[in-house]
Length: 463
Length: 72
Image 1 (spheres, helix red, strand yellow):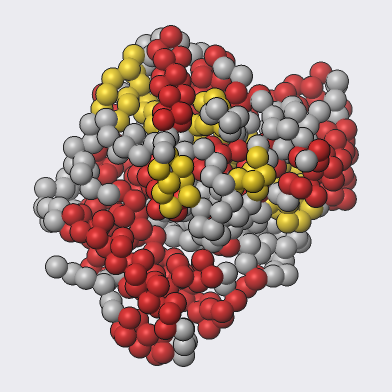
Image 2 (cartoon, rainbow over the protein chains, first blue to last red):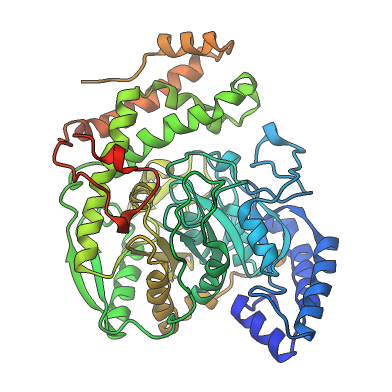
């Protein structure tokens, strides 16, 4: 049961071959079995979840199911769930129990999803990423949405919600062999989510297949006046058309930047994915990003994120010593950025956007590596192995993610295969603003042609 | 060219907030800033005057209002 995805669960509920109560019990058993080694969860709502599963079962019996009726879901621990702790992975918020649900939690509950519990986050989404990867516990799961990626890979839950300021949904998804979508900026409300950067933060779904992410997006997307960055945009049906294929669509491959620093096996599997999409009927063209060519997109991201993070955390500065060392340093770093550089960096975002807007006049979607490397070893500091060289992970891993936080574009990472050691590799599919459905369609076409997304790591409890 | 605050200025700013941070932490933060600032330097040379005057609806992201994007 725990290997079933969201769409499969809903299908089985409808056919009466499985009930939400049975599914929740299976998830809770799996969590109990795996957690001693997996360590994805920070808090559980087992009893409430059982009660809600019984209600979900009644709704199915009455033939009045809501869109995610009876689907277990986990939330990253920087997303408020009323009544259980939300710590943001920080000692500063130890024991903090919100009284109100975050907007995405309200939407999930109203859609019938069953909140199983909270999942590990690095400190405020920006701290140390030392979580073990289910595929190889001597390697990192990355972060900051580490708990969601671990829980999905270990088949503890079929759906999770993460946050992404510079790759925090996509990096752990890539390293753990699952799928994660950073939606268009403003499409999913951040109300009730601990912020890192008000112009770069995004909330999005993580799952094991594109259709599962599409089902979640239909529930999560929508305007919310309580989030100043929320956009009033018509929300399409992300499920409709997902299986209609990609024939006649144009796939763009950026010429530089994304491929300049990339592990050869990651690149090889990405090139194989491009070939599969060509065979599925996509035409492939190279695209240029002329305005931003020759500039460091990660540095641009840093000059926005660092001062925004420092500003947000000024309220906690008197408790500076309670931060983990890594995050404490980040809180200080932003104080060195001049106001002029920050404003200039914000204005430069328009150039990055303009480059991608031009690209999307030529193509329907872009494909890049989903990570610069496979999951690195759990060393201090973490290092990305790229070919024969090692690079500081935190300096290089954002290369493939930052441009899409800067430009606010939808970006989806999904498995593209494995390297020679059996570690997952990933590709990233990107589309124009509010074209999540197209990202999902391309991802589904790839997942129809491969089975990487169905492969599970060796059972954690056996190791 | 605009550069960042120095360690002394940052320490003074924190002191005004009643916060004392170990000097080694500030020095490390300054070192990180300096490393990224080197990579950011080329962005400072970019001419922004040719930016389109309005944000297109397709890129309607709230962090760049039309007022902001219309800067010369």
